[in-house]
Image (tube, rainbow, N blue to C red):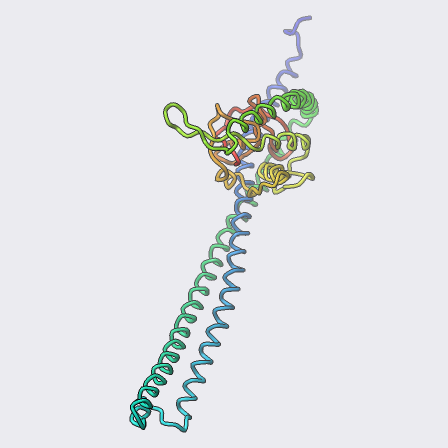
Length: 342
């Protein structure tokens, strides 16, 4: 019998599964944004902690300097007060026995006065340093509290959305195995095609670099600046090694990646340090148009809430979302821009 005789209950179930998967897809986008907000908060927190460490050290130095200056000033005051010799400048000058003696005494008074003035200036300077460093520490503590609260809110959102996702998946558990098998077969084909392209892409990149060895940006006829050729097309081959690695939020190692953890780890293998945040990574390198994309460029999606690595052929490799693995996808919905690392 023809397709029209197919079991309507199966078609209904498949339609229901597609609707649930669409819900899960929307949830995954929201979830990935929350995860990248969490990663961004961690990056900010690390920066604040470095600032605090520096401020605490500088406060310690300023307090030590102030203590030394105050001790020197106190010693000078005691010496003046307890001296058996005449203390006032007038008495010193009136006690001179000759013109030469007078000139020598004037010089001595000036030197003592200058020394005392310098000591007073140091006391005031170091007091100001102490106040400034204490204020900087207070600001850092306030910023830290704000970022910690942001991170806690992102974490709570992540946990809530994960629970919702799990419940949705449970409702179509029987359909998942079939879908996963189909996706594995598709990924194997995409990976084979991508690996076959790598030699040609590497040759093209080498040719572009030879024509522009300094990596200087060119200009279009209209005068608009374009990005210099990519220097890091080789990261594609590195990224491909991790196909099938599970998604782990906050992950940045071969045991599990989230999206920015994956791009950070891959680029680290070629000596490039990227922050563990898709939002922060968008500030790296230079912008590049979609029509000028080259292998190795970072590509961003969904309001910068997701990042991957362009591999050529209109495709990119990425760690998509919870429940998935590092895979190859086509550029499409949600694309917002790209950056080329120089």
